Length: 277
Image (cartoon, rainbow, N blue to C red):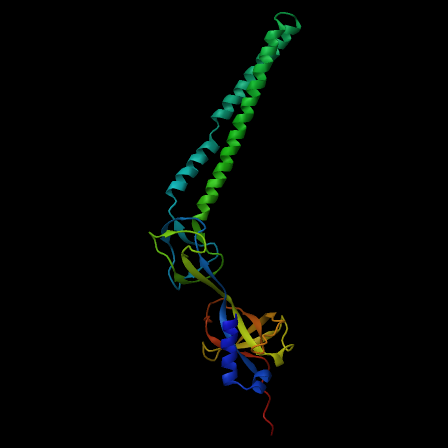
């Protein structure tokens, strides 16, 4: 921020007088709305990069992927365990059989046809079968949660675009090992160019003349002769004491990406006064 402020302030002071500046226009810089360096959140072998420098991308598009063979195998095993129904069906049938046996033993014990001990044994067998059914259901639920965990781990190995934009640079190539953290190597650098951010540096004398929501015309260096309307989204409330300037940020719609970022521009604050006759 300080570098941009200093650069624009020097351009302004070198080329435009304070009187003309405050009454007519101010120098500005067109920047991407945001620039992101995509890196892997997990350590792994980079398997593919699906985009190249300068290519336009869409939000949610798969840009790169790590090798997932081991994780895919673990996920398939967890899916099999989550979908198998044999243990639960076996436990349910065992419960049904034990309940019938207990009901018969209970009726016979009431008529004193069998000792009460046999009835108690049948009841204990039923309770044991019910516990086994609960264990089978818990194991199935555990397998489902394990599957969700493996699916989440697989998703971490696929890098998707967080916004519509363009690829600025490719930082890693298939076959390289990537890892997370501050020492890790990024894979792609991408930028959001719609809308553009217009960085305007104003002298302190202009403070209060622009408010958030104001519409300001912007004239970029290229394309030549073009003029666009941008809306103020942020106005500094703190003036830099060293340079005597403050920053206004504008948003400039750029749906066709016809306006390049990284070029200087002129923010038209007010129309120039007519010369005296």
